[in-house]
Image 1 (cartoon, one colour):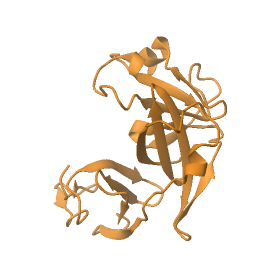
Image 2 (image 1 turned 90 degrees about the vertical axis):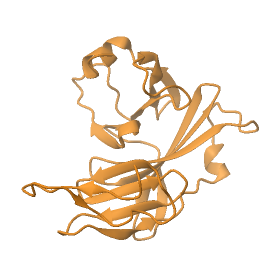
Image 3 (image 1 turned 30 degrees about the horizontal axis):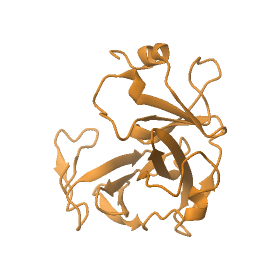
Image 4 (image 1 turned 180 degrees about the vertical axis):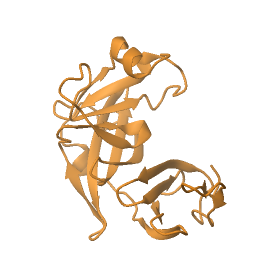
Length: 203
């Protein structure tokens, strides 16, 4: 993904190209579309900013950016099983909830142990409020959105984060690379093979 984006609208019959997406980066780590506010959130891989594009008008326009996403050490060390005195892998990601709320997600990993912190972004105050419970929703982290978990769907847990292992091959079709993090217990388990086969054909 270079620094321009192409798009099309229903009935266009052709592709259009935007102006430069971001002035100081060449590759987008994440591109998330929010259908509730018709905005696209772009997180470059070498910038802590999340650039916002507004697609509500005929011509898309850049609508500012979310300020650098900072997670204080106090928020990181409030429990969990990671040894914060040692080195650990850290990654920032973005997502949107079913209601259209923009979520900022901090991901930490150490020796195959994961911890997550979720913040709901407020565009008015430009701050993030800690989210400890997703309610009846589950976050599909790699795809950048939450889904409502129906009670009659076996194997899919509410208030959880579904993700692939960050330090292993994302492209490998191995169910052991897909994990579920329970926000209540703050524990991680592999997604059962029968669940993978039913929701991800071909695995």
